[in-house]
Image (cartoon, rainbow, N blue to C red):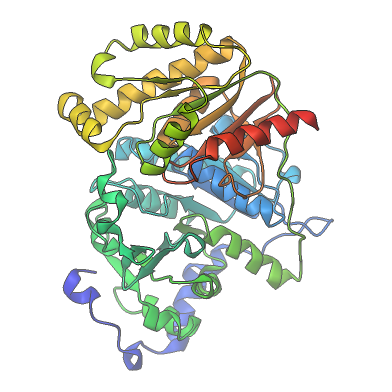
Length: 470
């Protein structure tokens, strides 16, 4: 849908005959997925497979599902996914660092992910990306969604990045962070994916050869039949941005897509889908209170790669009590030498204190780095340094890691060789608290750069220390 089309609400009197709309949607989408299968205990066996485009996003989805009583481990590789016992989980999140890789590589990853989930019996898939729709004109939201749509056998899908609980909404196809349009928010300064257009239809269209439609709020509130008629019109697009302003809209969307093979969006929709599936089966689950995971004896470190303002405040606050090594990327282009310098510095710090390593910087310095190294070059250098530092610190006995930044989190987890984690419920730590049991216990708190109060690092450390006492 182009701008001149998007700004016109569909005429509900001309949405088409509902029975023909129903016929098309039922036989092209719904009947591709048989009803959810319940195990003997009344729990759903792997009802949903989620592919997340970064680690912190995957963690948040898993933790929100866990809080709702859904057993949802997180894995970081197809191999770990294949090793999962389906009887031990109701859903699974596969988190891959695919947001910024080449589109062809992201498409290949998405296809392999769906095929691996299908081998576990999963028939419903969810593509999770950032609630602020972080992407570029090349992707990877559009390319990955189309690849998953093809692999899952679906005919249409929606894009629902709204997260009303955290004031992220979409109206008339335009995203708002609170009352601020996306393009006027802090996201316009993102060092890697600056979001300069609030119109998500226009953001998505350059990424795919498919046209992009809009499910406007005025149609959504009329109910499922009105939306189905819109989606069944002649030459209807495969891809639709969905207006979503509150939780009631999420419930309305679930009525529409409950049995579609593929849905896409941010963190909120999977929980509503799970509730809707259980509601249809008459199954209820008690919310989980699992906010303490097993302990991980060892030293503590904060690793920060995000340049978002909340992370900068958190580093500043942490540095008032503990040592911080601030990496100057322009002076650290010899990555190996920089890593060794940081590890030598860490050896000199008191063993009974946490410490921090940060490539995070203010906007002016970020722009200097990008001018010299290029946008991708600066990000790649920072990730390389922090990943190798994490590996070196692990070898020195560090077992509690707090990591700030989605891309940085993926880099650190990959560097540590962590393939599967148990996830805590969503709470003040933003859903990022997790634990690896083997081969050695490691606890992590992973956070998106823009989340958390100034004392977030201290709260995260307190939680991991409390776990050791239990």
